[in-house]
Image (cartoon, rainbow, N blue to C red; front, side, top):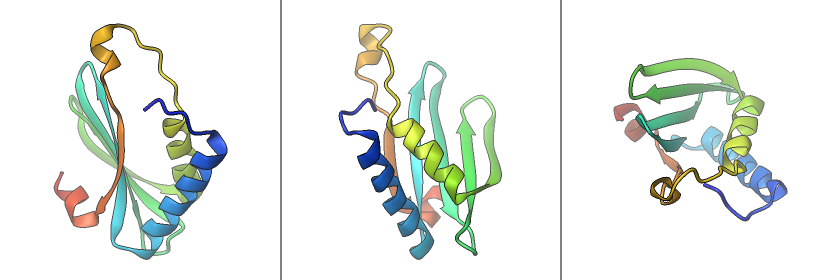
Length: 110
């Protein structure tokens, strides 16, 4: 991403996302393209709504999972969405990271 939205607006956006995750059977997926391939980070609310399942996919290592608190999810998403990456070369200038809300069933099949 780089984007031109301020951190305050992004933080409010992320708070809305985590609220939606607790109320609906959806999760959020952040995908990032690297030289090694596409990495994925997924967040899915667990039963209590204060804890989330964080699923990480690395093309070399596969999937791994851990439980994290809601504030950790919010901080990590804000950090990623406000990240301003320098462009190393023209090829990677077209690279686009993506943050999407998807049904939990779709996320678990990826």
